[in-house]
Amino acid sequence: MKKKKITQVSVRQFNKPVNLIFNIIIAIFALSCILPFLFVVAISVTKESAIMSHGYSFWPSQFSFDGYTFLFGQMKSQILQSLLVTVTVTVSGTILNSSIVSLYAYAISRNNFPFRKFFTIFALITMLFSPGMVATYLVTTNLLHLGDTIFALIVPSMVNVFNIIVMRTFFKRSVPDAIIESARIDGASEMRIFTQIVLPLAVPGVATISLFAALGYWNDWFNALLYIQNDNLIPLQYLLMKIQNNLQYLMQNAVAGAQLQGGLASLPGESARMAIVVVSILPIVISYPFFQRYFVRGLTIGGVKE
Amino acid sequence: MVLPGAIWMIFFFYIPVLANVVAFKNFQFSPNGFLDSLMKSPWVGFKNFEFLFKSGAAFEITRNTVLYNLGFIILNLIISVTFAIIMSELRNKRLVKVYQTMTLLPYFLSWVVIGYFVYAFLSVDKGLVNQWLTGHGGTAIQWYSDPRFWPFILLFIGTWKNIGYNSIIYFATVMGIDPTYYEASMVDGATKWQQIKNITIPQLAPLITIMTILAAGRIFSADFGLFFNIPQNSGALYSVTQVLDTYIYNGLKSTGDLGTSTAAALYQSVVGFVFLMFTNWLARRVDNESALF
Image (cartoon, rainbow over all chains, first blue to last red; front, side, top):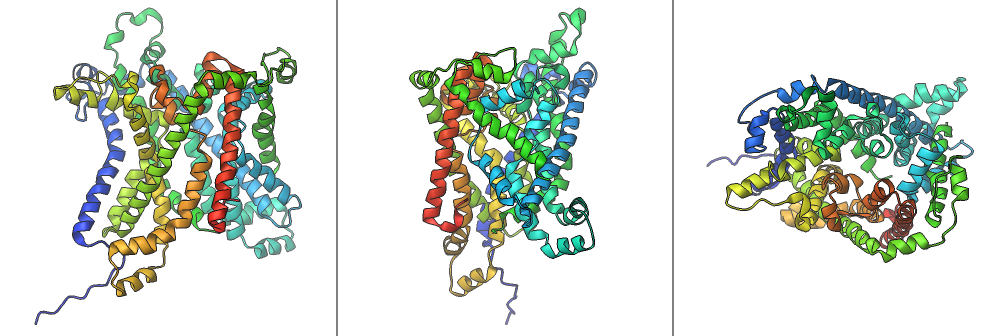
C-alpha cells in the first residue's frame, strides 16, 4: 500500500488551480504598477529623432543618452539648483516636522502635564475643520510674508496633526510611566528624559513619521505652485510640472539668449523631459527597499486597535 | 514642549479660519499690511456666495467632487479588500512580498510624476494608446481636449495609485486574525468561500467602517494633485475634471477673484465639517467602537 504523504495542514491557502488564477490576476496588477516607470526610463534613453518619427515606445529603436547629457550639460545649473532646493527642504523639513510632532505628542501623552486636555483639544479641532486654501494663502503671503522664500516650502507642512495623534498613542503604549518616574527620581530633567529615554524607545514610531514627512517634502510641488515665482527656489517636482505644461520652458532655461536660434528642434526635448522624471524618482526607487520594511511595520502598529 | 506646534497651529489654522471673513467682503489689498486690508475691505454680505451659486459653477463642481469621491470610496474598498484577502491566502509568501513591493510604488510617487506616466500613454501624437489605435486602423483621440473618457481615466488612476497602500492596511489586519477560527471551520468542513464570508470579512468590518468614515468625511475635498496634474489643468476638460479644490485654486491664481474663491472654500469647509460630523454620528449609531470621536 502506498503511504499517504502527510503534510502540514495549512488553513490559509487556496487549492492549486485557484492559487494560480489569483496569482495571475495580482501579478498583472503588480506589473501595471511598475511598467509606467520602466516606460519612462525607456523613453529617456531613446534618440530624439526616433521619438519624433515613431512616438514613445517600450523598446527604444535607437538608444541615446542625449537626454541625460543635455540635462547635466546645458540644463545643469537649473537641475542642480532645483536638486539643492529639494534636498535642503526635505532634510530641514523632515527634522523640524518630526521633532515638533514628537514633542507635542509626548507632552499631551503625559498624564502629569497640566494643560494636557486643553492642548489635545487644541490640536483635535484643527482636524475637524479646514481653514480653506484661500485663507491659508492670504495669511502665509500677506501676514507672514513667506511668499517666494524657501520657508514657504518648509513651514506650511511643518506640523502634521494626524501624526501628533498617532504618536501620542504610540508614546502612551510604548513608554511605561515607571521608567519616566525612576528617571525623575534620579534627577533627570524633562528634556533629558525625552531625548535619552523616551525617544530611543519610540524609534519605530519616529522613523515612520519622519519617512512620511520626508516623502511629503520630496514630492511636494503644491507649496511651490502657490508661493514660488523665483527660478532659484524651484524644487524638482515643480520644475517637472513647469516643463510638463510648457516644453519651451526647458529650452529657454537651457539656452542662454540667441546663441541657439533655429537649433531648438534638434534639442532632445522629449527624452530630456523624461530624463528629469527619472532623476526625480530615482532616489525614491533606490531607497525604497530600505524604507518599505519600516513603513509596513509602522502601518501595522498604527492599524492595531487601541 | 507644545509651544512650536501650538504656534504653528495658530498661524496655519486658527488665524486662517478667522481670515475666512474675506468671503463676506470685497477684498482689496492695502499697502499697510494684511490686517489693514482686511479691515478696510467693504462688507458685501452674501454677494460672493450668490455669485458662486447663481453661476451654476457650484452645482457642477460639487457634483464632480462628490461623485468622484463616491467612486473612489467604493472602488478602493472593493478592490483593496479583495486583494488583501487574496494575498493572505496565496501559497507563495515570498511572491506576496514582491507583489506588495510593486503595488506600493505608485503610492510613493508624486502626482506630477504620475501625470507624466499618463501623458506617455495618452499624448496625442506620441502616446502609446493613440499609436496603437492608429496602427489598428482607428483614429487618434484628442485625449486632452475630449472630456468623454476622463471620468473613467481619473477614477482608474486615482484608485490605481492607492490600492497598494490600502490593501496593505487590510492585509495586516487579515494576517492578525486568530488562525484557530480557520482551523475550527476546516474541521466543520467549511469551504474557502465560506471561511472568507464568515470569518475574514466580519473580522475586517471594524477597520472597513473606520476607513470608510474617514473617506466619507472627506467627500467634499478632492485630491488636488490628481485633478490638477493628470488632466494638466486643461480648460476643455473642466466640465468633468473641475472639482472644488481646483476651482478654488483657479479662482485664486488665475482669475484673481478672491471673494468668490474664498466663498467656495468656506462652502467646502462648512459642508465638509457637517459631513464629517454626520458620518461619525452614523458610525456611532451602527457600532459605538468604530466611531472616530
